[in-house]
Amino acid sequence: MEIAWNLVKQTEFTPGFDSSMDDMDKMDTMDKLKEEYERLKECFCQMENKKSAALIRKLDADDMKREAESRIMKLAEREMELKKIEIGQKKNYERDLHTLKADNDELKKTISDLNASIHTAQNDLMMLEEELQVNNEVPKSNINFVREETIKKSSSSDSDFAFDTLCKDKVVINNPFVLRKGQALLTFEKEEVAKHVLRMKNHAIDFDGSSVVMRASPIPLKRTIQFEVNTTICSKKMRICNLPDDISEEQIKDKLELTFYKPSIGGGEIEEVEYDSWRNEAVITFLDHGVVERILKQSQYELKVGDCAHTIIVEPITNAQLNKLQTFSTNSSRTVLLSEVKNLAISEEDIQDTIEIYFQKPSNGGGEVEWILYTQDKEIVPRFEDEDDL
Image 1 (cartoon, helix red, strand yellow):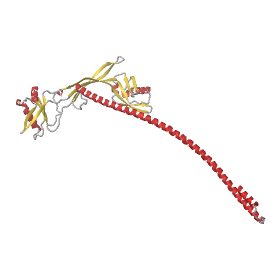
Image 2 (cartoon, helix red, strand yellow):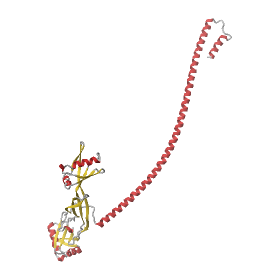
Image 3 (spheres, one colour):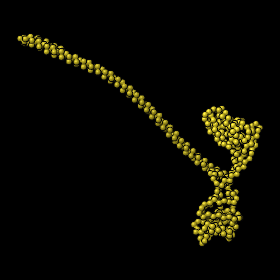
Image 4 (cartoon, helix red, strand yellow):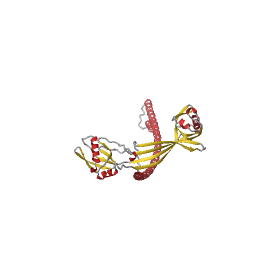
């Protein structure tokens, strides 16, 4: 702006300026110069404004830069902290992993030792079972079962007498002997004959032109288990099961007394109600005999609590004792097992007759035959006249 003003002055007073120029031309020139001055002045103001705005933006940018640098420093510090935490956690994880591996190895060793102990215990158990001559598996057949019921008179706490039912169950478990295909059982009248046949072992018998060597051996009879179970059934007490668990003990007792006092179901006067909240069971003791027997004719009853009816179960009170357990091996000293006769083109009856005739003769080492059984194409379980022999 100062340059434009100086230019105006130089125009007015510069030597050699044409003084003959008329005043009108001078005025036009001055106006143009003023316009140019004003324009330049406006441009200068705009430039100053832009400069000020640029300075303000620069200051704002500097503030943002300082703020960003501060955030970067904080993030760097946080990153260092996280790295330290990560390194610490990694060390802890590695330490825990090492501990877990050690514990795992120790558990594996413990499991291995336990398996070895179990194996040893199983072997000891098998040896003990062998010594005691008791089989783990009870066969489903050949069980002789005898029950004897008596009335046992026992004194109660109030010097009254309760007539309990005592059941004595005698059980004899025999492992059946199975006669396989092509085998024969031969029972002699005399034990000496059976022993002689066993000593000879092999016997060549002619079956319709075909010579077959039969091998004689003792009967491999298995063990027998015999025991007695004494079961006492109480005549004045019974157990109530499946009781509701959402009411109090006093309510349970009251409801049971009201239910089983009714003559309509065979009930009677109740002496005591014992409640077991853990099992949701109760034991009722009646004053009179015969009440339990009448109630037990029905196994389920309804116990009404408010608007709900619960199904409860009644059971007798029993006490079982195992007595007179005996395990023993039996033998049949007069019976011989003969094997094996197969693939003969003659009937089963003819084979049996041929075997019996051969062993009837004393010249063949035999004697009088009391009983013979032969099976050609199926397995059978022989029935002996005296069950005690098996």
